[in-house]
Image (cartoon, rainbow, N blue to C red; front, side, top):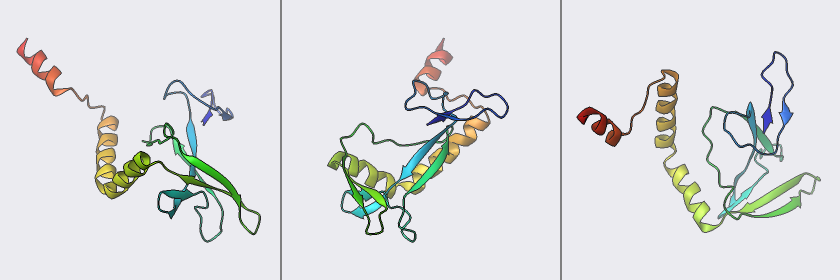
Length: 135
């Protein structure tokens, strides 16, 4: 993750962890692709045979499986390119599979949420609304 002071032309500096969502200016994410079964490969750019990284703004939704115990093996291609094979535990593989199978619904929900945030619409818990209306 990277952060900046917010000053004009201030440099971004690497930070290994955060305690608040508002701290990072963006997050770098390494991309993995399906390899075999529940195993993913960091060689996400197949034509070039190399890893890819995405720069994700802090206002985007990320699903993290970091709390799962993911087994990793570090390898090297015949051309000398390092890569990682990551095998997900069944629980994490099921979550990832469900998110992938419902990707259109997840995308639609996130898009609607972003619209609400931009419009600064306050979402009230239905139970809290009923309670405040009855008072």
